[in-house]
Amino acid sequence: QVQLVESGGGSVQAGGSLKLSCAASGIRFSVYCMGWFRQAPGKEREGVATIDSDGNTKYTDSVKGRFAISTDNANNTMYLQMNSLKPEDTAMYFCAAEFLGTCAFTYWGQGIQVSVSS
Image (cartoon, rainbow, N blue to C red; front, side, top):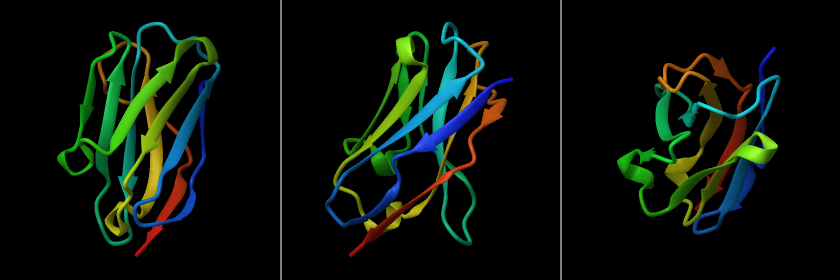
């Protein structure tokens, strides 16, 4: 059974940095598409960044130049390095994955809170 577990969230002041991790178990990274999503209170969930097994990455406009998504295939882990954080980045962050390379996400983590104060 595939499980995704996020870690690395927390509270930080504006301008600070956090690095989220998403550890996958029950699967070996081969062909995949993985991504980070976030949902703020009262708002819809939005996609933040995605990465596939060819190394292609995509970012939502609001995080371009500040966030970086990456994977460590040997350790079945995905990361989201978040720099220059803003209060509007405050949200619950979720990792998602699928292992056919279609980016039709099948597996989701429980979510982790990121709070940015001004």
